[in-house]
Length: 237
Length: 237
DNA sequence: CGTCAGCTTGACTCATCTCAACTAGGGTGG
DNA sequence: CCACCCTAGTTGAGATGAGTCAAGCTGACG
Image 1 (cartoon, each protein chain N blue to C red):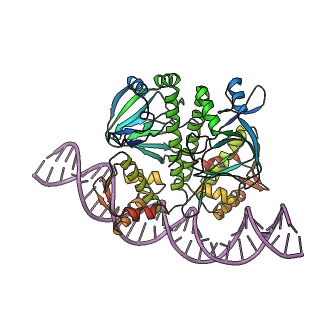
Image 2: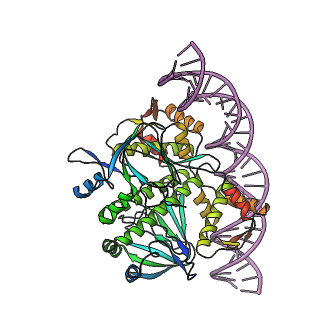
């Protein structure tokens, strides 16, 4: 069993400049550290559905997502998929000192990302302990997210799971400065189902039910959160 | 949302000495680092059912379990519990730079642990980057364990969940050098149920079913794994 | 214009939950 | 020492939420 191959970063809107920047390894660093990181990274692009990394493959490089959405998952023995999470701009992928990735990742839509060589990165954190500390903090945050996911999966109804998922996505877009009533959902119903431990039919039915209750309104590529309070009442149950 | 309050360590049997020692933050260190850790820790004891730390409380200290079993959990809004994991000797508890614990922890049986002051620990890792790196590796391992838990909870039958749980506990005792046919289960059926997202009745029924199939045999405080191959066939499905 | 992937909806099934009764062991106090 | 209680566990019977199988809808794309 190899350590996990992924760490999310998280972004925060800077109140002074209004600029959106990651508050994880790439943000909250001094300019020296940031420029050091930029020198070892290059920008790469992935087409929709393209695989970015495969579980058990050597962890030779890692990414910081710039634009687009990534699906993180484990493949099971019987061929089924468990989606571990979705990565948004600012999140890290493959950030681990392990030899091999423990998860697979696909681009859901068009994805751009800064790519780092693993060797260059491990060399860099040897020189800059402060950077390692940031990475460590990002990983403990990621661990909390994983625990949230466990809580979402254990002993909750389909409605609570879907509501919880929608709320968490809404919160993440918010902290990216992309909040608002419309919530983009670039992933398929099957992706959401594999994330929540449900079938795609149940996800579809649950969203339809939320629409009938005037909590959300389904629109192309996402939905409108009509009644956020009602959604939160369902999700926190 | 605060970072998670827990990191498991993991132990490995040293082929040379036969001695069991943790291969995480406390193990795999040079003598200098190990003695540095020992100077800031003291041994404490907890009675069965005693709470070791509470979620949202200030993270002023952390532990390395010496003997006994610990239940890690999150309390939900409706008063229910989601058990996040069980800690065995060698595992870390509350190992995080966050201000507050994200999880609660109880001693299940009599627990002894080395206690560290958070301030002393953060001071120590500033001096010894190598130690921080060990802690970081322990955390990525913990993240993998959390992902395994997610996989266990998503879209699996009660039988697969219980089999998977028993196999993982067996594997952990093994790597502690306490393997064998009998598997100690100090936690209650309710604890297992809250860990697997099932009811205690379903856990009980499933174990009874495994016993009827001559896969396991229930004994006081645990069970005998009669047919490991059959258990693995069920768990890996 | 046809095809195909993604999505929705319906009818039926079944695994798990819920409610409930009962058993076994361990500790406590009369 | 025994009666009692209390916790943990087991087992049964019935209810139900989510899964399965199946049909049909919609929009994108070649």
